[in-house]
Every structure is written in C-alpha cells, then in structure tokens.
Image 1: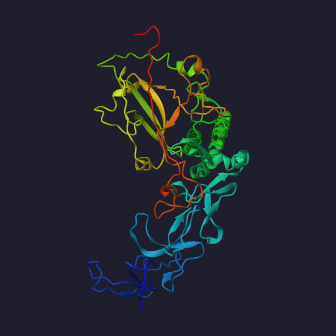
Image 2: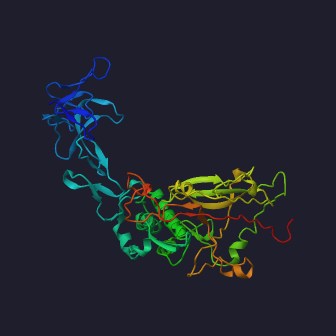
Length: 459
C-alpha cells in the first residue's frame, strides 16, 4: 500500500518515500490520483508536493543522507525544506532551532517557539521548554491569549511570594443581579497576570536609572500597567492583594512624572490623595467656553490600555461611556458645555459577552490646539469604590461629605474577563481556552456622569 488515511480520517496521503502524482505542467492531481516514488537519494516534502535531495556537502548544515524516507540530521538539529520566505530550497538541510524553540514532535521539521518569555528548549533535544535559570514557573492552564505558563524572576518572586495565595486572585462581586447579592470567584485572569506582572514590575521599579537595562523597557511598563488594571478590576478596594501589591510597587518606585506625587516613575497613576483636594485639581485650567456656537464643545481624550497593560493609544472621548446610544440624534451632545444627555436602554447579555477583554481608560481634558498638547488629568469618582471596607464615595455630594472621598484616574466600561473562574474547564465552544469560556459574572458601567463646574467669580 502506498497510501494511508490522514490523521483526521477524511483523506489519504502517500507513505514512505512517495509523493502525490500530479499532471505534468499543471500541478494538479492526476485523475484518481496515486502515489509515485521519489528518485534515489531524495525525500518527499512534508506536504508531499515534491521531492528534494538531501544535502551532503560537508557544510555545517549538511544532512547525514537519506535514512528510510527522510533526510537524517545530527542530534539537536532538524530538517528544513524552505527559506525564510517560504520558498523551496534546492535541497534539504539541517538547522538548529533557536534557544527559545524546540523541534516539533510531529516530524514536519519545524521549530516550535516556547510559549512564554524567559523560556528555553529542554536540553538534549527534548520536545518542550523550561524556564531559564534564575526563573520560576507559574502554570495557568487554558490561559488568556493562548498562554498556559509564565516564567517569573526568582528573586522578584521571593520578594512577592506572600501574594501567591488563592485570596490574591479572588474577586468579590457585590450587588450581583438576580438576587445573588455577593459572589466570590477565583479569577483565571488574576491567576495568570497578578504575580507574573508583579514580578516584572518589581524588576522595572528597582532597576537603577543609570544602569544597563536588562529588562526591555516595554515589558516593565506593560507589567506595571497590568498590576494597576487588576487593582481597578477590584474597584480600588485597598483590602485586596491586587491593590496592596500596586501600593507596594508604587512605594518602591523612584521619582515622579510631571511633578505629580501620586504618579511614580514606571507606574500607572490610578489613585488621588484622599480628600477634597482632587476636586479642586482643575482650578487653574485656563479654559474659555461658550453656551453655544464656537468654543462650546469640550474635548476629552482617553488614554486606553488593554488588560495586559499594552498601551493602545490616545483617542477622543465620543461614545465610549455609552453601552448603547439610544435614539439620540447626536450621541456626543453631552460634550457641549451646559448640555445634558440621558440615554436609557436594556442591554442584552450577548452584547456584554462580545467584549472579550476590558479596556481601561485614563481621561484628560484637552485645552488649546492639539499642537500644544495641553492635557489635564480629570479625576474619576467611582460610586461603589471601597476603602477601609466601606463605600466611601456613597454620600450626598456636599462639600463636607467629600473629606473622605477617594478619587481615581482609571476606569472601565465592561468587564467580562475577571469573572471567568480559574480551573473551570467548561467551554462555551469546542475550545477550552479562557477566551472561549463563559464568565460567571459580567460587570458593566450602569451610569456615568460628566460634571463641569464653573468656579466662583467666572462667567
């Protein structure tokens, strides 16, 4: 027999040193196609499209010749048939996979990249990877972005080992609809991100400014942003480990950004100092507005980040706070000074679930032309934020009641990621990856108010 069933049982393939026969000059299979042998000293390509000789020329990438139906390579090397652009080589050769890749076990001669940073191939040509020396492994099966494992700096992990607990990755959801009340979930996203991001961020904030950088700049920045995002997902609750970790890393960071004490170098700025001071933060903004016509529209910008801390960009605020625009002729009318817009609607669960990951926003007020790049940070008041075990922002809004308010910088509008339970292998489709599993809880912004107040003595 020169043919055998394919792995999926839906087709046939040629075996041994034969390839699929095609019509000369067309490349199309012959009628009722069959298999034909390669010439002596040649082996078929992995896809059976053609035959190639084995390179035996004494060069470093030379093969050991034909053994059975394939060109043989020395230990630790694999057969390569194409160049970097995917074109056929004139003959098969041997290559060494990069340090962070291993030879695939399926026999196609390819190199498989290790699944995470700071990994290397197993020694002696083993199929798989391990953390490089000095790093420890953390597994998170069926993780986000197809990542099932992370490697953490050993020294940094030792410093933060107290956060390696179940409680650190548990999210408490309050006021859950449907009579549930309070729900606690060990979050798969927190399991995957909290410690790996924390250890990378610790490396970033402890790295001397004048030293040779061992860690890529973007890796440290994204890790610190991710830690901040996880604290935001805990609604800034200072009794959760995610926010405690953020505070610890913030305390270790040296220097500040733009002269703002709460904005530490390499760290995201997510908290204001407690009290009414932040309410007056914009008193010095020299902004001329009109009730109508030119100059009546306020321009806000949103610095947007993904869950893993990647900076997405700076975009104008339009309808990001609106989960539905209703029937409003102009859904951005609320940006006009002294204008209000109220939209009410019912949201379908499918709409919320379609947002695979939350986006995180830092809001700024733009003053003057874009070329001047004058951006003023806008404080955010999260009504159900918890501090010291209490919802300190749930008050009447009077001046006296602001003394214990905790204003912040960052917010999200939909979160369907943190509610996916760690260890829950029940997929919503044939795949069991986190991105395809249904969350137990979904959160959304139920109301948002953009407040602009004229200061006394202004018109």
